[in-house]
Structures are given as C-alpha cells and as structure tokens.
Image (cartoon, rainbow, N blue to C red; front, side, top):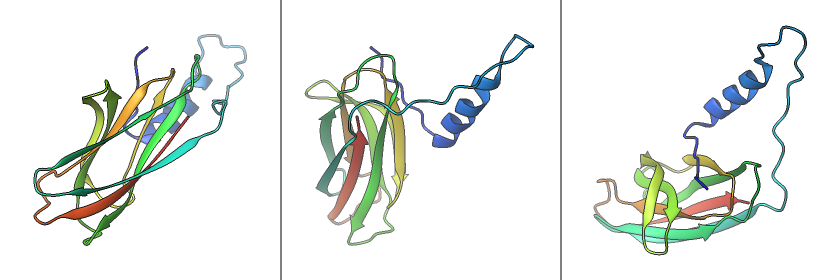
Length: 147
C-alpha cells in the first residue's frame, strides 16, 4: 500500500473538519470524527552526531493495518552544542538500505515536527542530515511516535 504523509498538521485539521460537513444531499449530514488507531502508540528516541555533509538514518516499522489512518510524528527534541542550529530532518520509506524521502525540512530546529500517516504496516525512516549549517560536530535527538 502507499504511504501518505501530510506536511502541515493544520491542513489535516481543516480538511478533517471541512470534508465531513460537505454533502450533495441538502437534508442532513452527520459529521464523523476520525478514530484513534487501535493498538498502542510506540515512541522511539534516536540520537546521533552530524558533521559537515553527514547523513544519518534511523529506520523503524509501523504495525497498524487496515483502512484506518495512523499518525507518524517525528520531533527534533535537541541539538547541541548550539540549540538554535538548523539541521535537516526527513521522514520516508525504508527498503533496508535507502531512505526514500517523503517529507523533509531543511531548516529543522529544536521542536520542529514532521507529521504524516500510514494506512498499513510499513518500514519507515527518519533521515537526519547537514543541510549546510554544520561546521563542527553537533549531536541531536529526534523522537518518533507511531502505531
């Protein structure tokens, strides 16, 4: 199955609220609320070091199946020694060797979030990289939550 990611949470919220109210039937329409995926959310914390031009991959697997959409969120939780430094962060699919990027932020700073969703179990990855701002080694922590 295809992996679909939504770049901006606000778009999801707006579409989620707007679409259930749309109807070609002028009688009544009962809006539906998205359901929380079944199962327990998994949180994984990855750390690494970036030097100039470096790229690190952190693969993980989702376990949610069926027609229900399950959120995947990656949050950059720390960068040191300079917490304001922007680095690259991406979410993508993992084939065992390659992280094929679906969403990216070349200017990720602490508390930057990438949010997407999956509708089936799939191998994914977080790609952390120097987007041109790393001149000396920096460490980072990224937290991923998925089903």
